[in-house]
Image 1 (tube, one colour):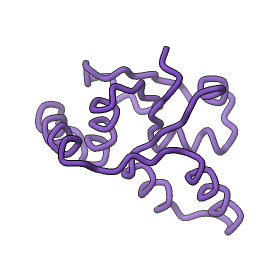
Image 2 (cartoon, rainbow, N blue to C red):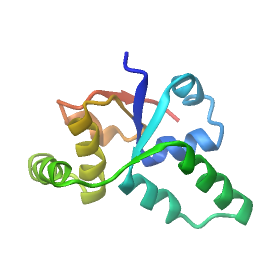
Image 3 (spheres, rainbow, N blue to C red):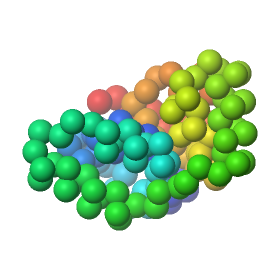
Length: 122
């Protein structure tokens, strides 16, 4: 298996929360995420300033993959073919473009056949 994983927004949240279902899956892996997941995570209403700083510190340690024209075109196809939400289509397209395994707790991604999905239960 690839040593690099693309993390969905929920994977980041569960990982930072110390969820025992995801921590072993991410151990010894290089974490990448989409700029869309960065936006979604930072858009949450944090309980404390310390929580916000912890998230920002984590995000500085991962590679944030920006939206490119190629990812945009794949996202458009994913949105059309699978009726995905825009954010999910962009995140999924990022994994597809870079041919990265994608880790998520969102079962909606199982319908995207070409995705290398690692589905975890939280």
